Length: 358
Ligand SMILES: Cc1ncc(COP(=O)(O)O)c(C=O)c1O
Image (cartoon, rainbow, N blue to C red; front, side):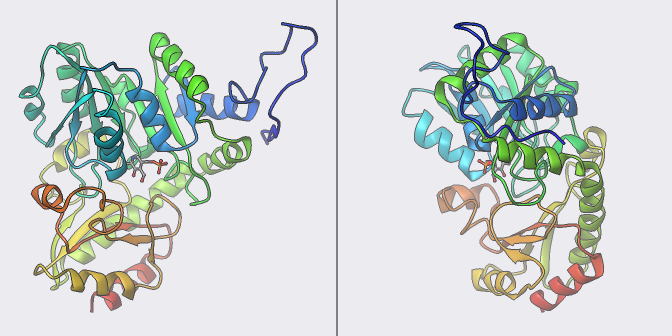
């Protein structure tokens, strides 16, 4: 197994003469192995690890200068929305939040100052699928970077660098780690130039993960493919069950043929993932809250991508930082429930939901 180099510094042979490792914020051998590992998983040349997904996103945003414009998916992870609007708008970056399930909407916001297109697909929590190849073509035309937040799909289901993305971002906290026991972010790129800039920021700003967490990620990755297969298999069955439930209004899962972006999902993903959302009939938030506190196997918690199933309420949990008006406008209703379907026995999972929905 890769050793855990639990050290903050490295003994040098002579001043200026060392073995490639000087200080642990800059480099750590356990981290190096993980960075090479994630680069390989994403078919990329360079990988970089950060202390959280948000720290990885923060490093990307620091590539830009006041006046630069960024076009983002509108129903993106609430923390990304918060970082962009509450932190980076203060430093003069300008963000446009655009529904990208029709990628031509991106064109309406392009200007001479557009520097980056930020795509999250599948989106969180409405499971829209964005055409990565199409977004890459638009980004190339306007000389902007295309960044894909690949957290929901994981490198097992899609590799955005292969279809034209410049940087892939991961909250490795989720499927990559897979066991809900560590927080981490990752970036992968094929560009030497981008890698140099991001590596500089990783060291200069210092949001690096510790070696113990790097070890846990490496161990999690060993079973990524098997976990993902079961996540997908179980989520598909849960989606079918929910679709036929009389109290369920709508199921958001890209694997359903009724999903508006099903064809794109089929083209760009190996399978449809372990995440899904559904709304209950009516507009009563209380009904949703009853389901959320009624499950026993689905634990009520933020986060996703672990082997154990989680249930969440975006309106009051992950997406509470988005103003209600903005939320509803984007289709994120008060009765929306999000599931991270784990790898447990499928009959137990369906039984648990059936009892909770009533
Ligand atoms: C899609 C997505 N991107 C980014 C993040 C942020 O990652 P982290 O929590 O590791 O900082 C999350 C966290 O939930 C996420 O779901």
